[in-house]
Image 1 (cartoon, rainbow, N blue to C red):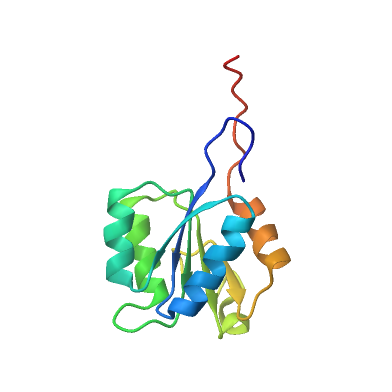
Image 2 (cartoon, rainbow, N blue to C red; image 1 turned 90 degrees about the vertical axis):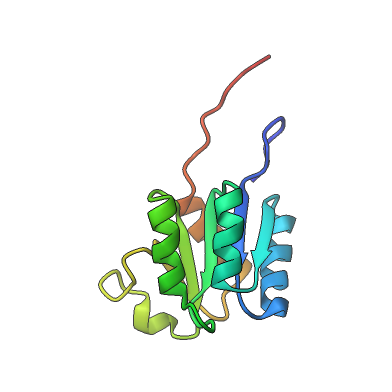
Length: 133
């Protein structure tokens, strides 16, 4: 979330459905985030390797590379990267025991803006206030 004089938090959204990716991007941009989207795991890894992100939000069910596989690959590149996975199988993987190890939170589809914001606030570290005036 953007504060006066601070760059907005950067979020990578990954979903193979362009309409879903764009809908989530719009929700996050409205909240003040800078958002990049990827339509596949391979594209996400390419973008992730070129830019720093504060959080990654990804779908579980994607062709070629499932969300849990992508999450594991991202954690190898950046072990402290917060990752939220969203899925239609939400209830099956929302408990901490069933959740993939590389995933920090799971949201069931469909999720609403309030639920997403609560998860973002919980996972994104608080920014340290730096007065440079």
